[in-house]
Amino acid sequence: GKAQCMSEKHYVTHQNLLFRRKTNHDKNHEGNKYSPRISSEPTVDPPENEGDDSNNDEDSYPIFTQYHKSLLKKYLTPSLWSKLSHRQTSFGTTIEDVIRPGLALPLGANPPRRVGVLAGDAECYTVFRELLDPIICEYHGISSYENWEDPELPREGYFDKNSKKAGGGDERRFAGGEQFSGEDADVIKSGGDDESTEDMFDDDEDDIVTPARIISEDEDRNETKPKSNLKRHCTVINNPLLVTKRKADPEGKYILSTRIRLARSLEGIRFPTTMSRSDRRKVQRLIEECTTNFHSPHFSSGTYLPILSMSATENLNLIERHILFDNPNEWTIAAGLGRDWPDGRALYANVTDLAKQTPDFMIWVNEEDHLRIMCLRKGGDIQEVFTTLMNGVRELERELRLRNWQFAYDSRLGYLTSCPTNVGTTMRASVHVKLVNLGRLPNFMKLVESLRLEVRGKYGETDRENTGIFDISNSERLGKSEVHLINIMVDGVSKLIELEKRLEAGEDVDIDEIARN
Image (cartoon, rainbow, N blue to C red; front, side, top):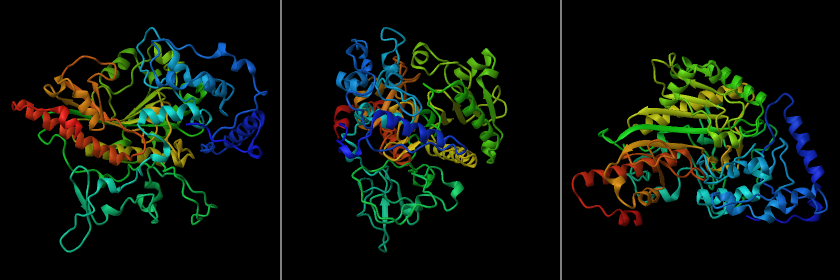
C-alpha cells in the first residue's frame, strides 16, 4: 500500500534516521541480545535534495525480462525504486540485497520465482515496507491488513454456536466436525473480546511456546489503548487439544508420510542472505548449546552435526533420506544463501546414530532461515506429528530464553523469515499422499486450491513428474493460527482421499462442481 503522509513536525532527515537506528542497534547488542522491535510506522524518506543522487538515476533501475517471473517485477516500479534505493536498515541491508534473488540467473537454474525477494534482516519488513507489503498481501490473498480475520481461536466462522448440549451447556463444533467443550473451548479467546488472552498459555512461564509479545515489567498491563483496525497475527502451537481428532486416512492406505515444519529467525542477527561468517558460527554454536541441554527424553539423546564435520558420503546419504537440506545450487549461491557453504551450517536430529536410525525431529541450522524445525514420520497421524513438533519447539525456546535470545516477531506479520511467503505462522504441514486416479483429472489443481491447500510433486516444487504421489500442504501462513491451519489440512486431505476412493469404486466425480461448492 501507499505510505501514509506525515506532517512536517514529525519529519526527520535521512542522516538522523540512520544515526538513530544505528545507535539503537549498537545499544541493543551490548550485553542483552534482544534487537529493537520492528516498528509499524512507515519509513520516512529524506528530502529530494538529500541522499545519493546516483542511486536515483534511471540507469540503476533493474532490467526485467520476459524470463523474470515474480511479484517483484510487478511491484518494483521506477518511482518506487527511486524512493527505496537510498534506504538501508541499521544492519546495512539495502534494496539491492532484498531484490537480488529475483534478478539472479533469469536464463537458467530454474529458481522458484514466485516473489523474487528475500529479506536480509528483520528490519527489512519496515524499511522496505512499500515493496514488501503488496507482495505479502497478494501472495497470502489478503486485500489489506485491515481486512485480516481474527486469527485466534475460537472464531465465529468456524464454530456452530447454535449447537447445545442437553442440559444447556455450550458445545462448539470445529470445522472438521470435531466437538469440544468446557475447558478446551475456553483455552484460547478471540483478541477482539474484552476478556484477557492470558489463558492462551500455560501458567508456567517456561512452558509458554509462542507469546505474541513480551511485556516489560514496568509496562502498565491494564493501560487502556485505542483499538487498531489492524488485527495482529497470533500463533497458537502449545495446545494440541484444539487439533481436530478426525483422521485423514484412518485405513492407512493413502498417506505415505507426514511432515510439519516451522521456520524461525533469531532477533538481533542478520538473515542468511546477508549474515556474516561470524554470525553463522554464532548461531551454530548457540543451537548446539541449546540442543545439548534438552531435558525431554524424546529430544535429549540427540546428535548435533555441523556439515563441515560430515564426509561427502554421509552428507549425500542424509540428503537422500530427507534428513538434511540440499547443498546449494546456482540460484541459492547467487541469491546469497550459499555463501561460505557449508561453514556455519548444521543439523540436529533426535537420534544417537544417524547411520542406523531415522529421526522424527530435526533442526536445520542456517539454511534459508536461521532455523527450520520439523517433525517427519511415516503414515498419516497428523495430530501426533504436530504434538511432537510443539514439544520440540517448547524445548528449544526454553533454552534460548535462558540465554537471553528470542525469535524475531512482529505484531503485524507474526514470525519473520527470509522469504515473505513464510511470515506469520511460518508453518508448512504436508503429507505425501497417493491419489493415482484423482491426480489425473484436468482440474485437480483447482480442486486442491479450493480446499485452501497447495500441491507439489513428490520431489518438491520443481517436480513435474506425475507419479500419482503428491505433496499436499496448507497454502495459508498468515492471519491464521497453526491449530487452525492443521485442521484445514486434515479436512482437505480427508476430502481428497474420499474422492480417490469414489474413483476407485468406479463412480463419476465432478471435481469442478465440488471445487465450486
